[in-house]
Image: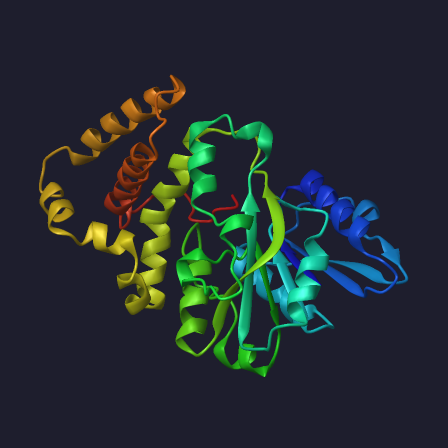
Length: 313
């Protein structure tokens, strides 16, 4: 069973459906819930029916990821839930691996799977850096539990039960980008859930690699994501390296410098230039870049008249 939040990515949704449907056999009963916000998709293409699977399409007024994921879960007629995002193509044994693991877990376990990037994009240094942030096949161990900051909602599975209803699903106060997955994992691990790895793999295809998109995500993480996390659960926020960064002595001292934002933009442009010249081969430089971009978001966090926080738009 899949809950797929989406917005204006019809071509990718069709690719996801094609992959999922190719994996379904006569022994499977699968329901695919696509949760959109009035993207004007071609329902004739999306509403595919066979005897053992069904595709449902829902329009959700609240255009944020958490609301859409939650709606897809609540609409499901089954209790074995698989979550993926609309830019994630499941590999051939995706459903099979989840079903194997579902047979070996209880309803106190949350699974999170392998995330890889398209091979054609791995020539980009920042994509290889992003790949290094996820665990891969060789890192998986049946005895290894994941920390909350290592799970991803774009490849997640669990057995839905009354416990989930009592704890609540994804917090819909998260708007914009960042920390929604982490807060979910933190809250559930705090309440006795185990976070485990699965071999189920998705290919995270965000389109043609662009270093500016990498920067944009970390800027929004500082501007919107951490702001939301602090409001939702300050204790969870304090556990993150980002919170420690912005509340450390160095950052607090730098905030007093006149023209700090211009200085940040200057260093950001230097690192962008180095990336485009293929000089950013050391991952440490990308850690600096994401810290700089995050810091710029922190500076803008409480400013008025900024663009809409909605990440989808």
